[in-house]
Length: 115
Image (cartoon, rainbow, N blue to C red; front, side, top):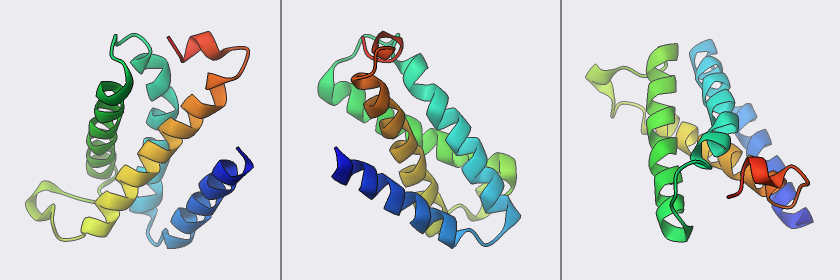
């Protein structure tokens, strides 16, 4: 458990060290907020195991692209111009979603997230 928490912390520091522009910071903020809320919403979808993991990964991609579009960090005309920004946002969103899920999994408030 401590190793997993340390890896999450290392990932957070890595992402925060790569923020160069305010657009990217805004996209990360949007992705973080939606990533924190996502496990509470996904609780109501009756999928198990691999299907839920695939849905969470697909949702992370959608959240990352929408956050990048809203912040102006990426645009549709040159979506492939900066793949590192999109991949970073996807990884960040998925990591936040999994961190919230793993925290509440063994927490007394676990039924709010885990079904």
